[in-house]
Length: 364
Ligand SMILES: *Cc1c(COP(=O)(O)O)cnc(C)c1O
Image (tube, rainbow, N blue to C red):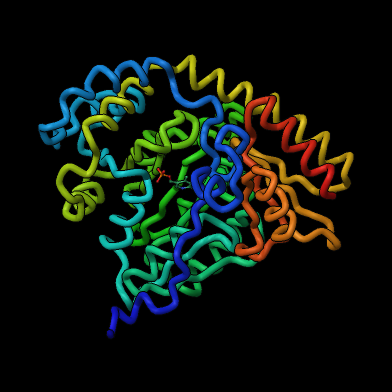
């Protein structure tokens, strides 16, 4: 059978292995498996969310409120923005998909960082756009600017903090860069881990309102999947100029967010204490990874997220290590697919991290 030729060399996205799969493949009991592979919140989500969702479970026959008014109002209040500046997606992933279809075509180019979130490339290929990458591992905005000048991309993605490396762009540098980009180039600022970066270092903190006030060609993305602990609920959002948001709405399928997810996200936004506590624990536990890396002579990238990237020594092989850990019930992310001999490990609870250190010390 002939298929859409644009899809020919797409490598399907490899999600962090689910616990269920490790149970099936290795016969390890679910309670003995630790998943530190997808940057989920190891503390789960707010208990208030769990209660709110339970309360509305009986009400599943009706379609969700497609206006999403309650969640929109909550996000508008959080970011001090108008409704016309906001779109909610089934994960921020879906907003990335809308952006790609709204702006890119087969003869256009997308500019991304050398190592970054894999979905940018996959969605770009859906529409047949060409992907241009920088060379530097960390976002180098001078390099971005040179490629912007020479390649004239339709869309530029800035992932800050970046996944899977954890580094973040200095906000002043970003603003200077954005001033030099013309108004017809759409710049996506993916802030999936912004709650962590903002806590660690004020100079990395992006205020979406300020961003879109200054730049009508920029869209900011946020998600409930990481700090809010709602990866299973699939809720993300885009904040941009009314013109861009209107265009994205043309691509939105009806009822793209379920009733349960809408409620969960609303309640999660209210419980700031839960999020703050999770972030504080994350950075306090991250210190243990830094100590571990120093002791093992492994490079660790300074992280503004809830994960660490361990760049292994030459004689250590990230794929072999990740597989050996998997057989012991520890799921982490091998970055060999990104061209790095490195492991990306989500900072877990103190017990989960201790388990990781014990297991990997046996293997190294
Ligand atoms: C996790 C992640 C997302 C998307 O998450 P959703 O679950 O789809 O909201 C987007 N960008 C980056 C960089 C991420 O790490």
